[in-house]
Length: 166
Image (cartoon, rainbow, N blue to C red):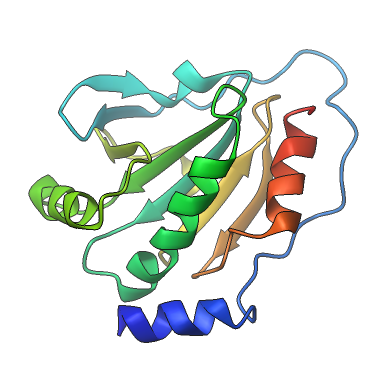
């Protein structure tokens, strides 16, 4: 199923809608939400650690075929962006972290994978996965897309660069 969905993504029909560029945030930046996480190797961290960066936060699970279908494109996008300005947080919602770990290791993904250490903040509430949020360096949600999409496009890379001020 995931392979079929990857093929469908390659057609270009499932691309996230990007909002019009917005002016830089006037005033003080908002802090990123407090979201305790732990890394694939069990180290604690927090979303707030990425303040000042553009954050691509993807909610996924190992048992979700659409999630797994979009992961190769997210991996390629991750390898193409300036990670000093754009942070990727692939947040697995698996109850068993070993399942997510196996998916990541088998595929050879190098993007950072995290697990919630507590319920995620309400801003990340969704009724479906995958769901991808892009937060600007000002801490505000710049865009959100529910469902699978092909993020590895020139338009999406340009959007991230514009948000990052490049």
